[in-house]
Image (tube, rainbow, N blue to C red; front, side, top):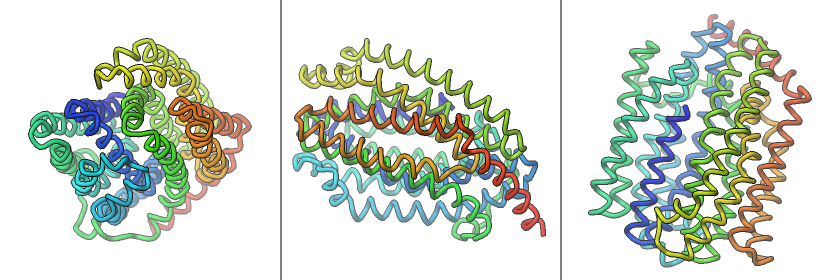
Length: 436
């Protein structure tokens, strides 16, 4: 899963570099459009977060027929959610960009680019759900093979098309690569899982199967949406500081995404394995797994963040030769050393809580921090007190540490255990209903 995530982030880094070579304005337009795309992609978590957990729990409990029924149900849900997201990007590109305070000089590049990205959103919804099902079946190597093929296709297309067509060339190559990914996922569903979707599966919304998915997915999506909206406030703050600040923020975030890779891969892997353990009723094994994974994640994230900070100026010069942007970006990368260990708590423990069925607590406990510390702190430190981008990154770190420690307290005090037991009982009941 680490390599799979690394490929995805690597494509984003290459795209940012190619856009920055066109101009820093194109680089900033590329970044702000992708922030909107990421905000819309969060809608897929309504389905993706739930299907991964429910299928893993069902398989762990030896209930393959439940897992297959849920997998088919997510195809129709993905069609509706993906279509809605694509329409938002296509018809609401300019208003969405203005919500982020995108500078006026970026709009001629950003608006058509975001509109061109819309078709890929529909394809991404299907790919995300089908990949989640494959991972829940522990077919991570097969999923990696699809991701490799998809991203190589995307990279080749971007390298060929962006010098000629600019940012729309990246969007076209994205749509082509996602079509390749969908074809490969369909082939793997048939070959590895013996799942053959019927025409009805692509639009039907079976209530019983989706109820289990939404029980996990809606709180998971709410937590992601709350974070994304708060994060968008920080992007809007950067937009108020001007195009150069927005470009600096974009380049530093690419470095940050590379640093968080191991923690993110660990968190997603923990979610799948804990789901299997909860489905099998092995609560003590789940508790031990999370403690070991968290210790490993903290050590690795801190080490990688230190290496990135030391190499900060050299890395930033890969994006731009503007000395001011390089210097400002290198300062932001140093804040990653404080930011990433706190984020690791969230990536590992929140995914573990969700896998046990304790999906509402992360939203309820984290909402205040996202609103006041992340969103409010970004404005207070970045604009009101005049600290600029460093103030925004201090808000990032404070929010991650506060939420991370709250989540760890929940796990360490076994607040998730009643939810895990209820999940195990509910799976038995669901199995009896579907069998009947």
